[in-house]
Image 1: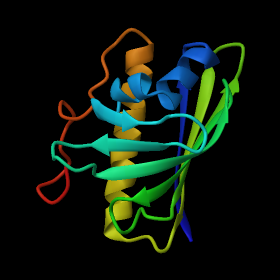
Image 2: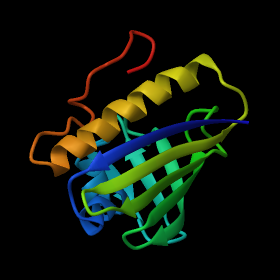
Image 3: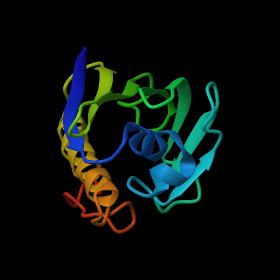
Length: 149
């Protein structure tokens, strides 16, 4: 199995970063503006990317306030279904470190390379938005190729 991993230091309190990755409003501020569903433990979050049907449905598998958010993809791109997503937060005196993992890919296919780049892009947007700059969630994000947005 293969994983995507990113580390981003954010100059914001852990509670602020947690809100950004654990709530519909927070997620809409940096990943896609259209987030629906139930963000509570055991709930399902639906993420829309310009189509009437959700592109991705995530089951919320873990919520530890100010420390961790976990999801499992239950519907979406075939290569994502069954993978697990983790947003682990570590507070330091200088910043909150966000350790992101998209784990359990069956194999490192080309789409995984795309997703790694796109997650890095959006996580840096999250950092920018929380540090006084601007995040660029879908549909305002940069497309990476003609094949995948």
